[in-house]
Length: 575
Image (cartoon, helix red, strand yellow):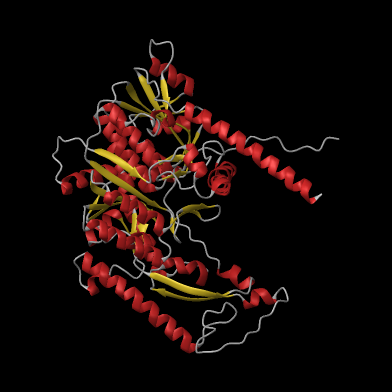
């Protein structure tokens, strides 16, 4: 019987492999250069999760759950639209059910402005709209929604989550040391609410977001701050009210928008994001011999290898990221490197090792850090040794602080009748035992070592940023800043997105203004077969699918249930 099951599962696995290979061949056959017709409209569908760059281990991603949208693909496609005479304009389909952060929307706004500056129109169309997504929509030439859609427009808020009560119920005791008061991530474990320091930090961030948001709406749609506040007091807008208030330019269905844009033509020629991504910039005369490398670093910093964790999401490992930095550094055609960071931090050791590789690269070629939604804590540690650093105005940066801890889970095990005993030899043998708290002497050693490591980091930050230790300390201990604040206090060098980073790279590399240059993104995308044969195989694909399900499908369902008007018949038990 055992041999039967072995044979059965081996046969099943072989069948699955054959199907995958067949699909791979079909996929490769369909990857030819696309035919883009004159007068086409690029349609960008901003719905669901969005990452900065294609995740690692995305094996079978397009088949099992979809590849997923990325900020990089959106920006690259919009950049090509500016010079592609075949593209008439852009239609941005957008929904409040999208995972783009503030800074991502800011970069898309900048790319929309570039398209408009090239003489082409950008129309927005949305089935549901909220204040967050409206930040992007307001940049479009016109915004349309169907008559039965809905829009909410409410104020800005920050919600913090605290698990102290849960840990107490589970009899788990954190032995935690943080540096210092503003390092609010620790409060999830040690408090039931915000501290005054955490609230202060969030208040100044909200003030910044409010100013940036209101400035954008006044510039794009002519709304004064008084009108923005009045709209937030109303909060919920039927579409006829949204049109009357000037938020939306018309209540029409999608087919009516198509009819409006196609004019006298039989049908509207459109091209999707994935199809247009196959158009190489070189085909449009955008490439050159010299290259600027864009090395992407996204996700939580942990371990050696970059991967997708089903629960933690994107993880970047120092060996994976450093390998890409070395590839860019050793390529003789690469004249400058843009280190594209989107990370809230993670493991200190891995962060420092990436930062060290950045420093080595910066000694040979200009390295410009481009911060996206967040480059804070470990995300700042990997960045500050670059030649220059810039960030989107709404980016979160800084958080120069540290958390170090262990959990005492003795009480948790005892709830299930499990106890532990031990024998030891030598001083402090049980210091990191998960079944007891630190002794007074152990805690003193623990905290002293933590402070020593942090102070060395802070001094290094001060040295690289041209500050004294005392000046850097006033910006540290966990304080976070927007990109605009970061420029004002000296933590970064300027604001802007990928376009501005490319401009700086050209300047620092001494490239003439009229000289063309190629932009190469690392890690280089793999073909389907290459992904399949790479490490991880089906296991990596399964993890990716689970992560995408949690990120997109579960989040979408929650948003639909909690934020959308539902007309449902009550369930009836008919027998």
